[in-house]
Image (cartoon, rainbow, N blue to C red; front, side, top):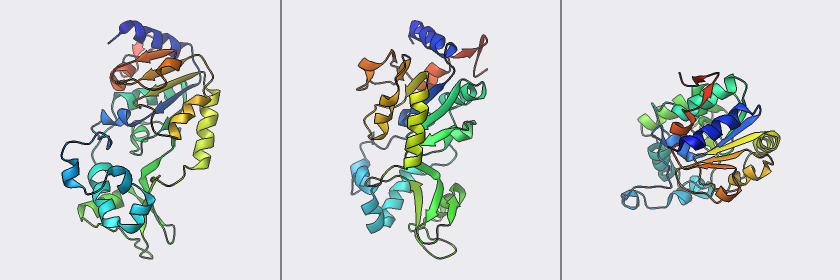
Length: 253
């Protein structure tokens, strides 16, 4: 780990009062949640369709059993805990440094770690909605359906189709969440981008609304925005953030 860069990051955090964090799948992979884009070699033997097709609105409407087979296997996870990155970000919010988290993830781990202001641009697995009557179902209900291997979960009131409150391909992002994300990023005096290669649009385009001079990119691999960043750290987001201190003590202590 480049400790000179860690020192620079620390100084930026010390000098900031409105930090916004923008994160992607790399934040959650450190908790053991797989990134479905980095599929193992057995993927094509197990599924008949690519993930982008399975996780589309059209596919959900036409082939829900196959959708839910993939969803239960790859997306809906149980017993996963927040990692160092989630915990440090929650601490930064608690001490008044961080004003918002804008995340592409749908797993709810930021909230589980204690973060309050979380803008989920791609929705969440924690909420599920009956497409007929609008009744909502929590994660526990869906876990029950998964355990029972019910491949077409139905509303217990009207029998309607239950859809996870996640943004599928072909669906638009929530405009209220987008607007608030733009507002938070544009008003930030520091933007930390972590665990994302910044290839998924329109979400990745949100960082262009930042106009300050403390744009930090933390990702194991390079991104298309590296040249525009004020600081680039090519390392684990959890390991990097766990180095941060406040009043001389590490935030995770």
